[in-house]
Every structure is written in structure tokens, then in C-alpha cells.
Image 1 (cartoon, rainbow, N blue to C red):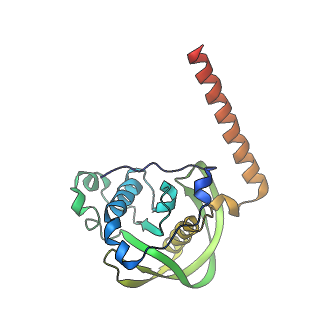
Image 2 (cartoon, one colour):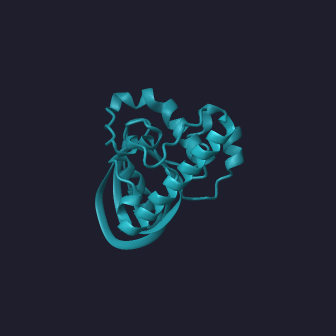
Length: 193
């Protein structure tokens, strides 16, 4: 399995809307799905969208359990990664078909390191998607699972959770990014001089 590079904000590729897969294309993307699951676990995330790796396909993986023995998962052979953890959800072409109530969670994102913010989402949703065999399924998600689905589906639509925070918080984060990049450039100059 391969650890995929996770794009980081403000990479413009994170803003591209992902393309749905045709049913007959799912089998050709099993390797990608395995790599997404592996990358999510290795990066210690609870969700990952293919779009976060620069692959514009409507695929997400989720595992909000936090109970899984990740070391065991990393020692598995490639064929077992998708079946070893019963809490792993793989959703191809996920679509929210019902939403209700409100909740607020402090969210973070593998594509926006060192930034967390309280985000309001729907408390309960139903998501329709395809599994790795091309079968349609519906998940009723509440609370954290609902939030995670919404967060990852937003990625497929080119929306980042930082878009949902106040302009002030976004500006402060952008300023800290510029400061870090500037410090990094200065450090590089000192090595080459």
C-alpha cells in the first residue's frame, strides 16, 4: 500500500469539484481506495476524501471509531485493509439525501494542519452511496459520524471547513501560514549561502 500525499491549504487543487465514478469504474479504483484507507489511518485522521490527495474522484473513507488497532492494520497485507476493520466506511459517489437538526463540533482537517474551529453542521443525515462492489447503500449518521460525512463530502465539492469560519479567523490562519513560509524561505537561504 502507498501513503498518498495529502494536499495542504491553500493548494488550488483542493477547490476542484470531484467527478462521480461510473459503476464499472469502481473495480479499477480498489487500489486507490486501499491507499486512501491506509493514508487516513497512517495520518491519524477519521476521514479522507480522494480530492484531498489530488485525485478528483468522488470517493471517501471514514472511521470515527478511534478504537481500531492501527498498528495491526499497518501490518496487514494489502488485500485485508478494507475488511480488517468493521468501522471503516467506504463511500463512492456519496450524496446527502436527508438532513435534520444542528450540532457544533470542533473540527480539524488533514489538509489544514494546526487549525481547529467550531463548525455548525447538521446533527443527523442520511447518505446514499455505492460500496466497493457497486451496491447502493444508505447510512443513517448522527453526531460525529454525521459531521465527518459532511466534512468529507464538502471536500468532494471543493469546500473546506476553513470556508465556514469567520473572516477574522481565516485571516489570522492565512497570516500564520505566510509567516511560516517566509521563515522557511529564510532558513533555506541561510543553507545555500
